[in-house]
Image (tube, rainbow, N blue to C red):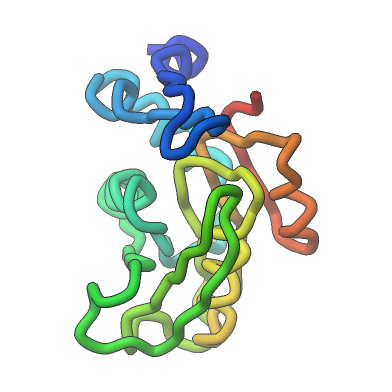
Amino acid sequence: MKLDRALGLLREVPDFPLPGVVFRDLTPVLADPDALRAVVDALQDRIHPDTQLVAAVESRGFLLGAALGYGWRYGVVPLRKPGKLPSVTHRVSYALEYGEATLELPAGSITPGQHVVVVDDVLATGGTAVAACELVEKAGGVVTGVSVVLEIPGLGGRERLAGHRVDALLTV
């Protein structure tokens, strides 16, 4: 399946999770094996060749990160919501376009100097991606880039990630 056809499966859900927010749902892409393969292959094609580890953002980033890790032999580290990890190295709180959130890094998961790509489904305001990069860097990792399926450029996320490579498969 070609990438444009796979990305055509993305579903827009208006007024979720709050009125005025349009949620971009990746579920139809993930549910289609050919679409999933096309998206994961396209993400891999854009990842910096020095990358050793995927930092996968909860929760849809987990699915993409695991597929990348398995397919191309990267390690995968989950960046989790609070209370999900038994041992936390670092924690970062940040603003979303419709609230606030916190991400935590599991203890001992990134070694100093390790090259890490941050993977998530959507880049909107950039709060989650900035927090993810901060977690990687606090642990001594080197962020090789931020890779997402969908970018919403009008919300300024890319600008907040100045100094980091950002790759998006689709902008809307």
